[in-house]
Image 1: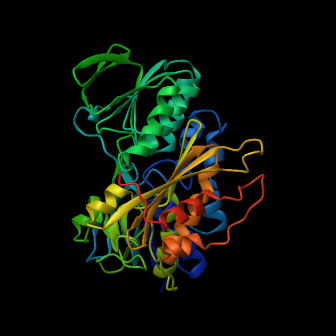
Image 2: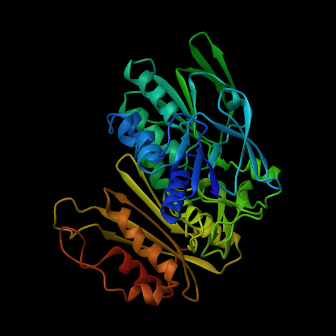
Image 3: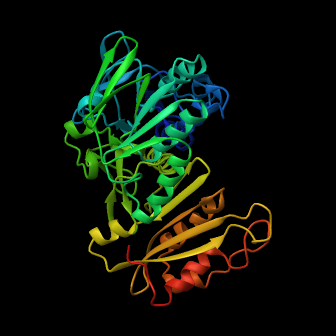
Length: 451
């Protein structure tokens, strides 16, 4: 009898899972339930579509829906929202606009992703309030930008998405106010790094307001009236970028174990605590190799990888996902900010004997055109254990260098191991005094930065 695999969610993790399952067991019936009207698109590309860097929304779609149906034999059902889970009975309830229906499964993979946080006043449902977590939202915002309907906007949240959206709007000629409840942008980073980011944001005429929250939001005519702290102003649009929480509602209600931020707990084969239920992507907490425990760090590369593991194992194959170190990079106007592992604040909060060593180098030989300064901050224990790194610089200097540090964390390298690496050198690409090695050599000496 044909076995049925149901996948909840048609994003990066969901379609990776469905495709991996199909490759592993060609006889398996694979059904994907996607709540929205698009599947398999690059969510991280949304700001660049809205800025016009990417011309058409279709360019963000990896494969059209017909490809999965006709070429891979996957029953992809768009605009179909999963509404209930009976784990004991192996049944899913869903709504495709024609009323609720039931679908049985032999195995289930939950890839429901993350839900934008919209606390308090930001809960207003209005066509000029955006969360930019779906292609439909991006298309609607791009249309308003193209026709000149948005001249002023407030972006709430100065994390990755908020900073990217501030840049997107500025490039479209919008006057931008960027609001952050914390005392600095990108609150997970340490203060010396955030100072550089804030300087770059203000240099591009963004009205950056820190340590303040939006306390009221309402529609007034064709404008939105927004109260920031104790000041009320009007804007053409509000972009909510205050982070995401794991969308784990259905499995959690069915008894699945959850961890940080309500994310589902899984083993290395992406199995949840429920029988025959797997999970992957932004709704799970993955093993953090530095912390040694689950952490909720929703990023695209892990979504694809964990989806592939979940699909392979659910279809009867063998695969595993060892864990993450939280590697990320973000473009903030001309600035590149990259990070991996722990920041100093995070390391100290874990009770680790952590310090920081800073070094400044160049992205290329100093005499080669386009050479830019690169700041490297290594976070490590006094005994030499590497805990993390942050890099900041103009251009793309930090973007791939951070991968050296990510590999070092995966390999369990200490400072001495890092300092001994044989890294490439050629004037157009790197200086002979490579910034990563400068920082590692400095860290090997007992002179550290403690902030």
